[in-house]
Length: 233
Length: 233
DNA sequence: CACATTAATATGTGCATGCATATAATCTTT
DNA sequence: AAAGATTATATGCATGCACATATTAATGTG
Image (cartoon, rainbow over the protein chains, first blue to last red):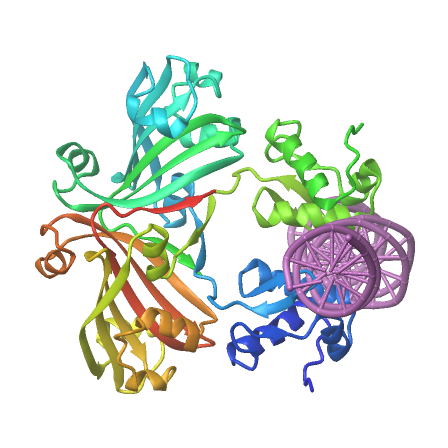
């Protein structure tokens, strides 16, 4: 019998969470169905449904029609990362942001990206190298390819006042993308722009974004030494 | 006037998405309120609410009571990462998994973790070093502290057949945690266990998990060279 | 007995309604 | 005119109900 008296869906979720965490309901075990829980908590089935839906979303329970709801065997090792716009990230640290475009060229899509973009592309792609600064110290180095088929106006943009990153966010929103995180050793070039020593381990990410099946941009970001990407789970 | 005839909340979400992607509704712009949309789509406000709530969750719109709903200025750079149990990750690659416990000791909590764990802890903490293999090649190196107050049974576990990682997942589920991703240079010790060269850039992560405010475990994972953590966005 | 058909059931979703709550806008009061 | 109280309004949430849908279990049929 239940001691809770909350009839809010969050309250019910907390109580269900408690039972799972304290192992009253073991992993893999089937839990009472919505109607029974609704009766126990003295609320509508809709409210229980809301709570269970939320738990299912975060991966803690597995729900199947007719089969019922059971506690997940392998609780989620999911983490929602927020990859911030660099300017915002820097400013959130209380430091002043600026960026500098160090290279800009129209060029054919490099063969290395043919596979990643997965479509035949027009010859010209805008290639940019940018350094992002926090308080005048290098914060991250960015290499970016922009598909001019997807964002033709980019051809005439200087990207000196507004960064390509932000411009694209506002002018060529993507529907989906692909992200990968990894580590690289600082090459001489990287060491020079990031004001560090060659060989140092640097945190890096690559992201490709599409709108529909039209690729928009490929970006590779390499952060200055010591950078950590954090997240609550 | 609307051409859509779906009255399912997903259908409405798709139509709203379309308007955002095709910039009918500009970033920052306020969109019609729930009641109006409900009328337009010929459905109940609840249904529009469901669709909008979903869009808000994924960060595409910002909702405030009384102020209404507007298209997010900085669309989400959110990514849901799945940090897999290493065995599953290796097996998903079609390779055979094994692990080897190379060090095990009861010791006081190292000062470095006092701050992270944020509570006074009993003297003894179980410290483990584990190497994870894929097809007999080192895949990742793990250093872990387990709070024996949170998981007392761990004291008598050998962690040779089942890894601490998996054991904890099933026996000391956490309620929340903290994850950070970064890059490290391979030290001599790391290079030796991961069968690589010293100095190489390695992808690493640290995770601390709690149940309530009781810390369970701290783990630091360093992956073999070339590792990438991927995610769809 | 194997296989197709049907029924039962748990979750999923939609609707109408009412009230709760945060907050922008407006109306006091000093 | 500034500060504080009030009101209006958009979203947030709970409810009771009905029906949809997926899936298991039971049943029928050759």
